[in-house]
Length: 111
Image (tube, rainbow, N blue to C red; front, side, top):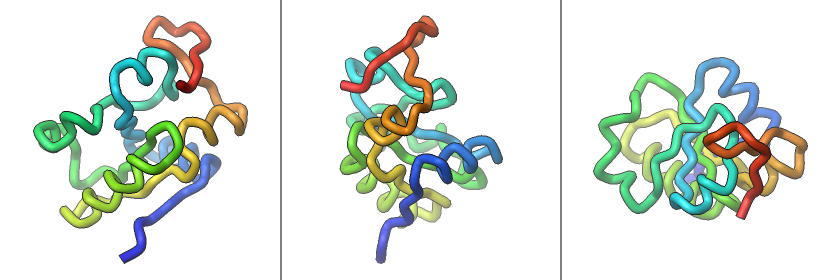
C-alpha cells in the first residue's frame, strides 16, 4: 500500500480545513522551529501518545525531510487513521515560504 502524500500547498489547505499537522521531530528540532499550527508529538513517544489523536480528524504528518513522517503516516493509515505524509517535510515547508517559528513566536529555523 502506498502512503498518501501531500505537497506543502495541499497540506496547508488540509490544515485550514481542520486537519491536524503532526510534527514528529525530536525536541531539539521542534524548539529550533516549527509550523505555527503544528502539534508536536516526537516519534520516540508517539506509540504511547496515540490516544491524543482523533481518529475522525485527518492528519498530516511532518518531519524534517519527510522520511520519518512517511513511516508515521503509513503506520497511522494501517491503524485506521486518515493520514498523509508532507512530502519534503519542514524543509519543503520553509522553502515554500511558509512560516517557521519558535515556541516564543520568533522566527525559527529547520534543523
